[in-house]
Every structure is written in C-alpha cells, then in structure tokens.
Length: 181
Image (cartoon, rainbow, N blue to C red; front, side, top):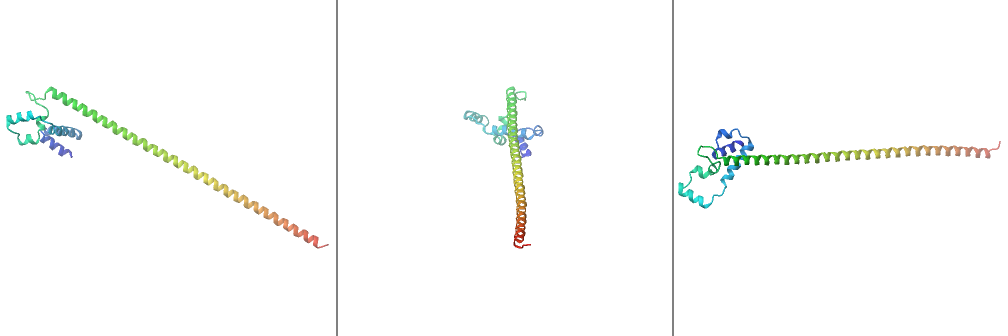
C-alpha cells in the first residue's frame, strides 16, 4: 500500500492529518496495524447490548471505523490516560525491539550470503589453480615426449649413419679382397 493510501486510511480512522504527515513508512504501517487490530477486536455480547440501549446504533463513521473509539481513551482533561500512554510506550518499545531483531536477522542472512559467496570464490580460485597446474603438467609431459622423440630421431640418424659407414667399409673390404693388386 502506498504512503498516501496509508495516510488516508489513518485520517479516516481518526488520526489528524498534520500528525501523520511527518510519519515515515514504518510508523504509518505501525499505526495502520493498530487500526486494523482495533477493527477486528472482539466485543462481548453484554457490551453490545449496553451500547444498543444507550444510543440505539452507530453512526456511519463509527460503524465503518470502530478503531477510533478503540484507540487511546481520553481523560476528562482531553489527554490520553496514563495507562494508555504507558501501554503505547511499551508497544513502541516492543515494535522497536522487533524491528531491531528483524534487522539483525537480515544482517545475519546477508553475512551468511557473503560468506557463501566468498567460499564459492575460493573454490573457483582453487579450481583455477588446479586447472593451471594440470595444464602445466600436461605441457611438461608434451615437451618431454617431444624431447624423447628428438633424441630417438638423433639416435636413429646416428645408428643409420654408422650402419651406412659400416656398409661402406664392408663394400670397400669386399672390393679390396676381390680385386687383387
């Protein structure tokens, strides 16, 4: 519900527009909750009969908004009774305490989310490090294999050269043995 709508409902419930104009959203909601609670309060059958005998019914405003009567009682001097002020103060304290507890709960949830996010980041970093190590290991293996292939190729070339030289010497020996001088 918007701020304006809350203010309208509170004015209809009997609050002065000047007073509620300065309220923030939380205060508007708090007072509106009191109005709604007052609307739904149980009135015993005996009191209903007494009221019917006294006035014979309710005016339209009283019927729609009984919370205006169920709100703070007025003393003969026009002020709120001491007990009602004390109760209102206790309600405010309880609401403030509930608000603080809710803020603390939200803060804890936020901290949990941050910790979870940090944990996920650490896991990602560890996974990246592991992947880098694995890539490095694979690259080293590839380089070792290439080095082994080069060494094997050189060895083969050396062996082939030796074989050719030996074959060349054998041919020369055969020729020298076959051809007398």
